[in-house]
Length: 333
Image 1 (tube, rainbow, N blue to C red):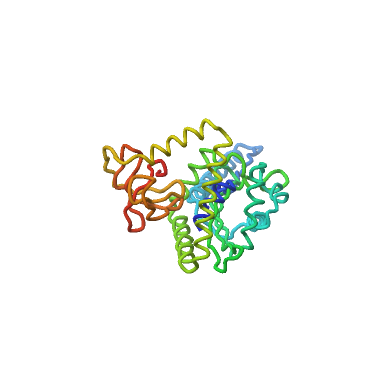
Image 2 (cartoon, rainbow, N blue to C red):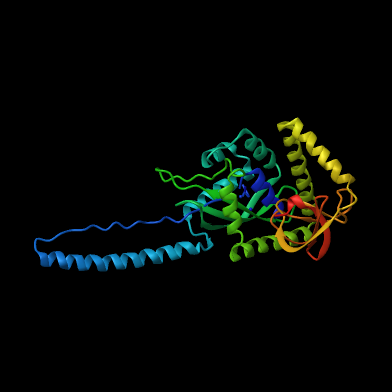
């Protein structure tokens, strides 16, 4: 959670990328320690003091330069061999459904995570063209990794381009690094930080490239398009079932809200927006401000839309890929 936008959604939400999603990598800061000495004569003391002052100035300049470099936090590609090895092991586990090995390279693997991975590996045949992009994380020696790949799905000829975002924790005392898998969705600081990184020009270009190749793949292979649509609907169904199991009361309230949305015809007072934002989850774009209306498009998590108006009934009028439609406002940033 997380980071083929459908794959981004599944990995970030189901696998904790942001799974995503959602993946964290940091630069090591080296602190230089300077020692001081004293001479036997006042002259030597003065000379050493002068040298010491000059050394301090040089050290401060070096430190300032190092901090400036660190603050840039540029996107690097395939720079850390150990991280690439870790990411490849992770992808192998996802494709093969190897939860035992996965449990060794993540901080915590729940029973629910195990079930999801064992279930989804039936669809995955292999992956190729793995490229690992990294940026500094929230703490020293932690990283955020954006992993691009092409997924071979069982029974589908065309490869599905995808991208996931993994949070990589700092190395431990033995030099081992784990992938953050637990509490990713609840880590507000991490979520906010990844969202900030996603505003980087190079990261946006990376997402745009994967999205373009993904859409091209869908257009060229109807079997792939059907599989992805089915997977999205299945993920949505699974999410609803999980909510029902967690709390019958919450499920009932959700059903009431859905019924209210279905019955909504009058949008109420409109508020002009005219702003660009992103969808927080894959969401249907409807022809009218009602879930009963026809779907005109499917906007994937993280994609940009232009909000034209928002309404009292909880819907917003948007422009998406040259089309005008309506989505529920709760799915907009």
